[in-house]
Length: 80
Image (cartoon, rainbow, N blue to C red; front, side, top):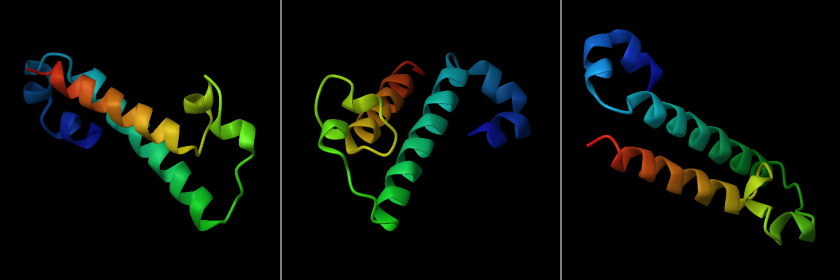
């Protein structure tokens, strides 16, 4: 996303809330990669990592991937 903003700055500045969308896409990518690494490396989850109100803030959990995806969709919906 950041490459697009650098390549076409006039288009990126014309889109309202583009920087928020670009930031959300980067955070989703980071969460998805962390989750994939955890699966690839066969790192077991501590039961406390998957339960409780803060499960979506721990790196590598499926809850965090879902939260970041929802944030990405929310940011996209604000573009238009």
